[in-house]
Figure 1 (cartoon, one colour):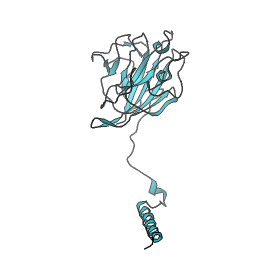
Figure 2: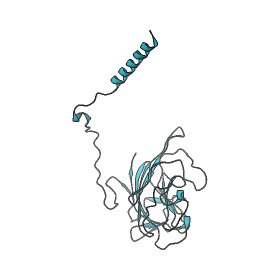
Figure 3: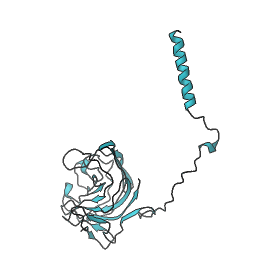
Length: 251
């Protein structure tokens, strides 16, 4: 059998294989309609309030869902009369009692109206997903700093697509989608990701989490499961306030 004939037979067999492997093109609309699984019904919140399936972590009344990151004692931040809480300088970070994996997180924050400090010392705080990965909180209005550490950055990893802060002293909103990394046998097999919307503006678009977000050094990838959400006391009289915090679990 000559080479040309062998090639023709091989090609015919390949085409035939793919023809049988592919599904026949639908000819009726109902052939591409799905009726299950039926998505659960969720009643959306209004003006940032929690949807019906959310876990409310702070509603302005108390810090019962939070503990000190230092020693797991009661959180020592300040609960204000306006339904917010503020960093109590040098009392340390606080974190949720409950552990979470992948989540949708809604959180609102503001810097004090009275400007103090500059650079990284002006209203510096942070939102840590899984207790490891920081979305930066900072007053960057007329206050430049390194761009991978400015407001909305994934600290030291990803520069935000925009600086979308409201005026100093007004309330900002972060809506964060966090997908946790996957580990098998102590090794990371799939990176996590973060999407951040600040005040309705997309500032982080499903970016890869390279690892932890340290102040000094490269990202690290210690294997982990679920972990708390943590809010940072930067220790320089930041006086950042938070309110209306809720999560929807995604796993």
